[in-house]
Amino acid sequence: MSGSYWTSTQRNKWQFTKDSLAKEREKLWIMECQLFPQGLNIVMDGKTNGSERSMTKNIAITHRDLHYDRDYNLRIYCYFLVMKLGRRLNIRQCALATAHVYLSRFLLRVSVREINLYLLVTTCVYLACKVEESPQYIRTLVSEARSLWPEFVPPDPTKVTEFEFYLIEELQSFLIVHHPYKSMEQIVDVLKEPPFELRLSQDELQSCWSLINDSYINDAHLIYPPHIIAIACLFITICIRGRSAKNSLSSSTASADTMNQDDPVFMKTLKQQELFNRFIAESQVDLEEVMDTIQGLITLYEHWDKYHEPWIKFLLHALYLRPGTPPPSVSSS
Image 1 (cartoon, one colour):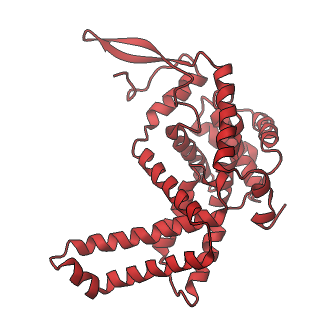
Image 2 (spheres, helix red, strand yellow):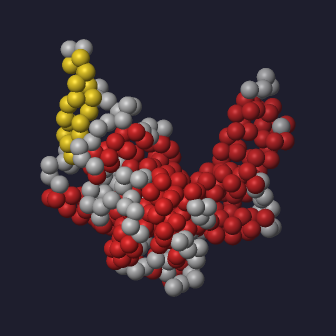
């Protein structure tokens, strides 16, 4: 166990470059194409000549659906699964974040088509709680998971313990995870002191915390150190605040030049952005890594706008409980 990220197994064993991560995913992609060349057959409701009828559609294995690295629908859904189970049990966010990391690492090596995703989520939460020293009774955990997903989670708690050994094996027993939350708190403390004297409100800190939570959906935690993610989320938080201030000012009848010079809210926001930019420059962090993390979050939110939960639930239902029948909101066009 390492108290420092820089000497931790997270950095030495589970941090990838973009190229090395792509190679790992390519191995899984080839394996999936070999094991499941037939793809997935689903039964959908459609209309032919004005009459309703069921039809079978094949989703090719080369399609992005159900590939964790390519399907943002699946990624966001997994995120909600972990959060939903965690909230039912009042589990600390740090433990849920660790569970997210376990899930991402595991699905880097194993296909969603090979395992029960709902059992994986339950096991990740169970193991993360033990590692983060907030253990849950396994029977309570399984009971709550079954209340959420009764079709997919077996009632026998030993299934979770069996899956736990499988999970630990794929994680190579490297279970300690360092999160950006602590880095964010340290940076906020530094910003309060001279020469920056930049203070963030509780709403802004909560906004930054939420951005860090969302960052677990993409690959940032497999590629970049925690402090890079924290700086990126703080940067977005401060920029959003600045933009909202500008938007409120732009609705005024005064000219933009006059507002920029005379409005104290705008000038304060501009000064705070300049102070944080100065902090980034003096901290000598890798700006390319920070900007890439910001772009990753922007891309995530673009996909989030297109998130369609009924579709991914239907696909998983068809995958695990064949033959699948679509829910009312899923139909062929």
